[in-house]
Image: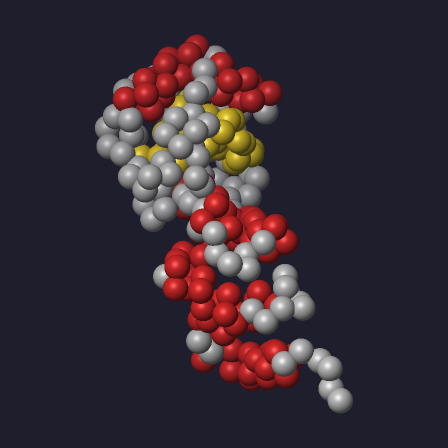
Length: 231
């Protein structure tokens, strides 16, 4: 008698279909197949359909809050680790165009990379793209992580890594987990204070970008930063 679980034959057929015509498979089938790599000893079809039902589409599942994912029956700690790895993979892939020594000719390049990493995060995080005197990227540096609606930081905490990396310019970036990238009064105050202090050290503050899931706002682009000291 064959004691193999009933889904083994189905899984083999699914993999064969993917090799032959993966682009014509349903979303739940692609997700089901992906889940097998984290759950090799379980039937993943039901879980795949439940995830799609709850989060709408593949993008929604990838971006879902880990706390919400844990509420789905069958989504345990092992799969949570796999999902975190998968999200990190995609975030890094999206950042490949923003490599060290890449010239940052427009803030949108930074915003796009930041949205992939920060747009779906459940808490605010503040990062800085540190640039040399030719506006080439030195590093994309995490400064601090905060709460769901605030990330407390002092201007010196931004300028310290800028000085350590010998940066000539920087672009601040942080996320708004609620989905609305409208800059707050605190965002404006921090940026203007930082701009004044940075100018005394010969560092240009080129912009402050606020990113959300699908969009971003530029303080520079909207005329919310003074001109003259950092241009």
